[in-house]
Image 1 (cartoon, rainbow, N blue to C red):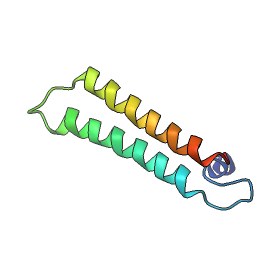
Image 2 (cartoon, rainbow, N blue to C red):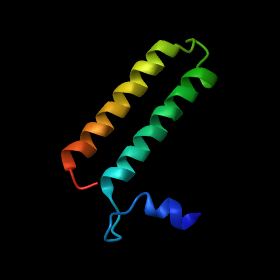
Image 3 (spheres, helix red, strand yellow):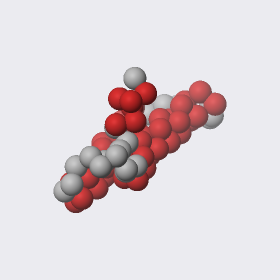
Image 4 (cartoon, one colour):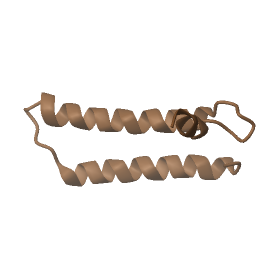
Length: 72
């Protein structure tokens, strides 16, 4: 299992791929901020439409990043 997870963050040559690590950290930060806004900060309600817009923008940005690199 560890080898499978490690292979998701490395290149074909076995080097750590910074882009994949940054994309993973962006997704974790997005989810963490959503959890904070929902469960800790009770002053605001969870807005599913804004969550969807943010998630779509995040996926589009990460996809564009990997598309521009052309080596994945």
